[in-house]
Image (cartoon, rainbow, N blue to C red; front, side):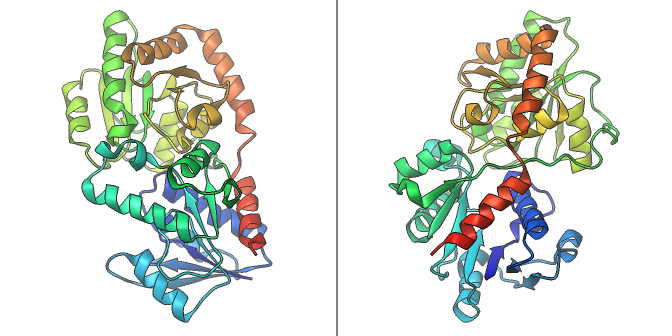
Length: 360
């Protein structure tokens, strides 16, 4: 079988959740599948790791200025079709094989349209409608996302497979030095800066924490590149520089070092399709406090302290409980390590391969 994969997301330098998912999936498909042949479609020069894949993985570079997935891959499918086309995110080409599969990571634009620019909102709604209507199968990264798809786009349950993300323990985890500017003790926020991530609410809650317990040494460390509608978020960071340290985007090595040194990871989002940071914190042995919404309880289960993301006092109390109660923090670390065993990139790749090869 010849399987085509839109791999440009995996080739991006500064990877966030979706890009890292694409990269890990390709790496682990290559590790488990020597039977099928693959074509990886790229728009730009491949990174070194793509060049070291086994011989059943071939790279095809196809430069194109705009709407590369929808137009350029359509052209490719018209003249050089594959048996199955896999799109690791929701933007499917207009022309595609009958057997086409796409992964839906979340439907945040349907729940929080006001947090998106007009173009991103329209584009996201259209490509999701298109892939929901014309793909042969969909992969959802959580049961919560599957239920959202069924409700919002009227998709039959048996068309959607839930396949969880895995996690990667970086080879340099525990060995990398913490980057300069990092405080000795800190609470960590790790995500792209955009409104639905609720960083402004976390900053307000952290200010409450410092007012209530000024003797606590922790600062709030923010790691993540700006997304869209980030101006007010950056203003909140700048207005609270006495308690907030912003490191922008960091390398994978630095991220591993920053995670391992955190006293607690807080994910205060209003909506998440999965919440990869939870697994990364579990792997680093860091206690987790997260919102009690969408997929987050599904992923973290009993290994987190939960709060209402709309309630600054609840966010503050969740952080305080972990920072002040060592037995609670230790219990969360143990539960996180056990919970982590349910997730792996190899498992994700095997289940994805089964979907790709079993479509009729």
